[in-house]
Length: 487
Ligand code: HEC
Ligand code: HEC
Image (cartoon, rainbow, N blue to C red):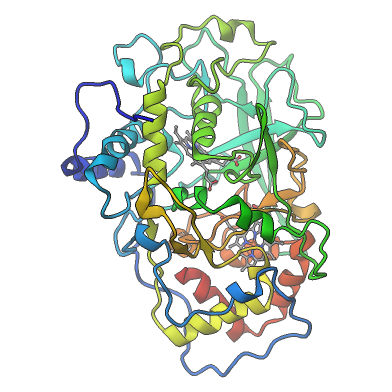
């Protein structure tokens, strides 16, 4: 399919530095920290770690051994991490034919969309209800945007999914809360604030949210609120290309291998097809195409040929009366261009300051059982559109499966066929770069303020791995964390 954008200028690659500046301006609130360095406690003199008893077998035993050659993390899509904005970068060596979609896609991704009828035909139609008016308001080139301020205020980079354990959305608000609207004639849905409480047993912050509806006659009732922070976008095209067969082969729904881990495929229904969900914290989107259309619809109020209706529920009649910016507001060629940009996203290289310590960390990662879900190595299938992404050995640290993560992480919201306690294993590549920002938050709602806290919240199928992590010596924990900081 052709991905040309119907507009007068197509951005040449030579214009990318300008776009980088634009991104920088958009990201002024972000605290920048230098990349490439490592602030972990590395120690070359450590002896071989001895482990607590009963380390689990992995679902993919032959793929979790530490590599001594350490191929590039994202195969041909790998870029240097030693730059101030290591995310949202385009993979190297793309032929100019592919850039025809990728460059305009990047522009559509960073532009601030305006409401309908304001003279920017290609970039209008945001709202009537929305969370943010640009993809980059939430997805940052540095890692993750700050979300929590000290006084209970939240930034736009966290959104809220609404629902219950049966998968029912709220009759008035729908499946996502939008706190912005295009003008005063359309009421916003409400405002979220947070309360941080300290859990004694974990010594880790638990985040609770308070919702104040704009219309006091529309209470949330029994509907649960699930905070979702915006993930860093890394190697999306590569994840899209992991063959279904590899994901299915790693699933072990009934835990037949008795390692306590029973990942299952999130089959999602798309029209007549059953597809494997891959994207989002609960893997509700099967492809970058549907993921992007979903983001446009729910996060920005932009219609596409996939979601033709505005994001108003049947109980929000005034919302339906707002002017629209085209039918649909985002043309297929624009949606394809954004998908091309997402597909071409690079992977920052691993940052290994001491190979021997790194390999020890990789072994610990496997031995305590992290690799049972965070699968280190995957291989992509074939792409006609981006042949450079074909047959690449990559290190994303995910199985793309759903896991029961226990009561502590149960958000009360079933999405598609993912239960309220189930989450997709998030890829960990680049997580150490994210962690260099002291404001960075982890887990779906950002309750963890460090990698260690994130690990300590693991429960359910990950209870064993969490416990074995806790039993490591301080020295071993540091080695494991320094490995995480380097992948
Ligand atoms: C209001 C904030 C916000 C905006 C605006 C936004 N996103 Fe997202 N994005 C998120 C959040 C939050 C998630 C995870 C959603 C979930 O699982 O509930 C996400 C997930 C994604 C993912 C999947 C990442 C993964 O690891 O699975 C992609 C790709 C993505 N967004 C692309 C886009 C594109 C393209 C746009 C603009 C058209 C966009 N997003 C706009 C917040 C945002
Ligand atoms: C049973 C599968 C499973 C095991 C085992 C597991 N994880 Fe996870 N991990 C997950 C899932 C699922 C999440 C997302 C949970 C959420 O956001 O609520 C996650 C989240 C994380 C995060 C936060 C990622 C982010 O983007 O914020 C880190 C870091 C992490 N895991 C590291 C580890 C380490 C280290 C180990 C071993 C001690 C481990 N995990 C073991 C499934 C697992």
